[in-house]
Image 1 (tube, rainbow over the protein chains, first blue to last red):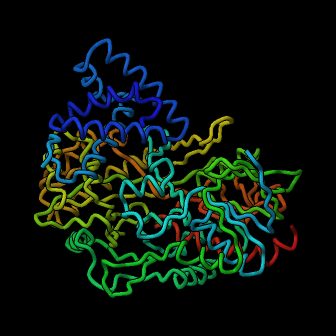
Image 2 (cartoon, rainbow over the protein chains, first blue to last red):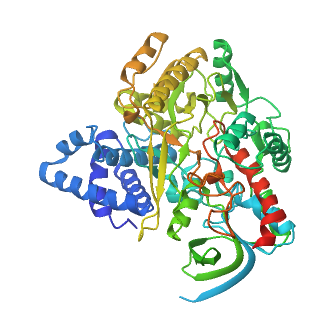
Image 3 (spheres, rainbow over the protein chains, first blue to last red):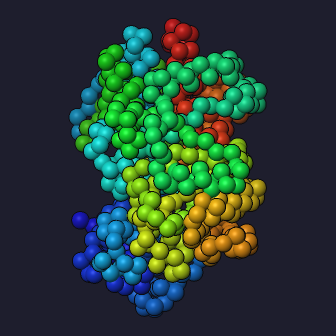
Length: 110
Length: 479
């Protein structure tokens, strides 16, 4: 079961994963996104609210401008926004190599 | 939801390095003690150390908590029976005598005798079987030692609260609170209530009457008692006091040991995922010290994340990689603020300019140490970091490092209810009694007036024993 905010978090997370780990297969990608959404739902409440607001804004940006612009945005060292993307990436990367330690650098299964 | 009432002499809130020794001493003295622990009881060995599953089950918010600031400082809190002692590396350091003396004089703490604290520390060491490894240290630890030796830097092995029944260093049994002080407390009659969060203290004019609690299953209860000792750690203790309406000098002086990290790749498979290095480099202590971190593959990947595009090819070699940290004694301070309507407190931390410079020099020196130890590639954890392959690359760290680009984190939190007789600065008196209350005490890392510059739980336990004995000798008869 995904967290309530998964509707806005999941598409961004999938886009970032698709860029960072293009070889990650769909089954694993879904599992990672589920994990990230689950973890976000256990954040301290003020962080959860902050993440929800930023996620909403970022998702709006993605819908309006597309995935390429989203990825460009994710690589800019912006306060708050940068922290949000860093959080998504940290949780994703940690989960991938914790769960499948022999994953290739592009996300492909060994 | 139904409400249940409990009664006891003393309610101890939290079962970690402060709460468990406190509960043991009080119960053994014949007091009727309830220990309220927000987290679950998790049997040792039922989760892999330093794994994501452990984060889920034994850490607050799955280990994802942060003190806001520029940069923000990620921190972790244990949330289980035994608290942080169950999940950390178990490395033990006796409270340095000069630090205790500094606390005594700077914070006007009565009866804080460095020699007496030393005696209490030995008592802790005996209770927890603190000892060095019986054999060779894990390979990542040996590399740290080797690098320091080649540079002529002071280093030593930190003992741990572990026993080694088979004599094998790799098969240690952690002597944390669930193996030591908590069983002692329960044998003496203390009642441990796990999955039990204390929402609020019930306050009278200058007394606390008890507490309102909520269990994980939604059941609510009230606990009435003659005294309350809050030992919920440096974040949750001030948050609970503030939620209950006690704010004077509470939560305003958070102190931590900020750390930055790097990953070092060697030519052989040295990674030990479920253990941590025991050696620490103290050449620049107390300002700066180096040690090793947990190096699960997921954590190795995390250490490479800040410069993922350039570093990610190394992740497949995680067996040849170990993660190390540089920790500083910070002059910055932070705040813990309970906000009405929010279940969790907001935490902030401010690094000073000197702290930022020290993090930079710490990371540079740590990279140098790794090269001396034989690392072929060093991957500092900050955005824009170079891949360090020789001494020539070290200057690039100094040129490009910025604390705001780094993954700054800490696992050592203290000083949010500093003890002492200076009521303008201190939240509690010299023995942990909250100013203005006859029967409300704090007895955990919150009391330490500043970060001790070493692993702090030895200090926390020694001070907890001191204050618990003082409570039995003088405090209990007055409540």
